[in-house]
Each structure stands twice: as C-alpha cells, then as structure tokens.
Length: 121
Image 1: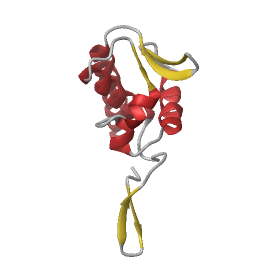
Image 2 (image 1 turned 180 degrees about the vertical axis):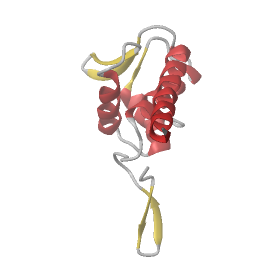
Image 3 (image 1 turned 60 degrees about the vertical axis):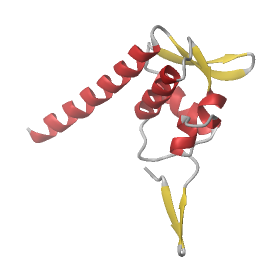
Image 4 (image 1 turned 30 degrees about the vertical axis):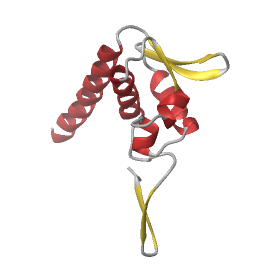
C-alpha cells in the first residue's frame, strides 16, 4: 500500500496517495470513522484527514488525496457522495452511516471474491 518507505538506513511512513489502497477501502474507513465518532449525516474531509485517529492519519493521506479517492468511489455509489458545504468538501451519507460502511465492505469483498472465483475456473 506504499505506507512505509526506505531511504538509506531510515524507515519512514510515506505520505500521499497509496497505489495499493482502493477507493472502496478508503470509503469504508471513512464511513467507519464517521460512525465511531458520532457523525450525523456528513463529515468534512478535512476532519477525516487530520483528526486524531482519522483515516488521513492512519493511511498518511492529506485532504486532497482523501478527496480524490472518495470522489473516485462516490462516482458509482448511491450511499454517499462528496459535496461542498460552505466551500469545503464533505463526505455526505445518504442514510445510516454504519449501514453505509457495512455495504461498502460487503460490496468490496463480493467483487474480490467474484474475481478470485472467476480466475480459478
């Protein structure tokens, strides 16, 4: 996922987009964080990026990288969207946030399971 990098004898956490981190995983993590922190309806992407214990801190992604990943996921999603509220990007949930997280996770695993099964035939 490009979380850790090596430069000479130093190991460091890599900040920025993660090539192995799918938009669905980012969307699930954001919905899970929102549900666990008592969010109601929408959450700013800035909060998702910088708050202690947030997705941005866990995956070492800034606000722009999170927004790009969430926009990629939300382009095909009906359970959440990225919208501007007062000029700032927010992740907006259409319904129960815990259900949104569960739906994203189940859909992601269903797709990967189908690929594995189809590849085995």
